[in-house]
Length: 247
Image (cartoon, rainbow, N blue to C red; front, side, top):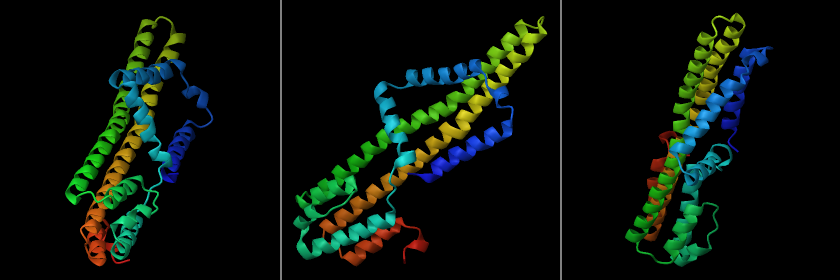
C-alpha cells in the first residue's frame, strides 16, 4: 500500500474539515453537489468509453496498492540472473523465480533462444503499449481535474441566477448565494485535492515503471549477448542516482 497517497488524502481532508470548524452543516449543499459531481460524471462518460473507464479504475489502484519494486532490487536480480547464465547457460533461466511479470516474460524469451534484436523489439513494443494504456487512465483523471472547477463555476452561475431572480424575497438571497459559493468550493477541492494530484502521481508511476522495464530489457540483452557481469552491473547502475551507485 502506498502510504503517501493515504496520508495526502487524509491531511487534505483534515485541513478542509478543520477550516470548516464546528459549522460543517453550513458547508453542505445538495444542489452544489449535484451540479459539480453530476456534471463531472456526465462529462467523463461523454469523453471516454466504458473500456477506458475500466482501464482507469485499474490504473487508479496503482496509486494505492501498487507494490513499488526498487530499481536497486531489479539490478540485484539481473546481476544474480547474469551469474546463473554464465554458470549454467541461458536455458537455466527458465527456472528463475521472480514476482516481476515483465522480467518473467523477458526470461522466457531469453531461455527460448530468441534473437537479441527481435527480443528487444518485442519487449520495447510491450513497454510502448503499456505506456499507452497508462496514458488513457492518466488523461481521464487530468480531464476530471480540469472539469471540476468548470462545473463549480456552473453551479456558481446557477446560484447567482436564482439569487437575482429572487431579489424581492430577502429570505431566498442567502441560500442562493450559499449554493453559488459552495459549488465553486466543491469544484476547487475535487480538482486540487483529489483528481489532479492523483493524475500527477499516476504519471510519475507510469514513467517509473517504463524505466524499470527498460532497465530489464538492457539487462536481459546484456546477459544474452554474454556481457561480463561486473560490466553489466555498472551499466545498469546508470539508472540510479550517483550517490547510490557505489552502495
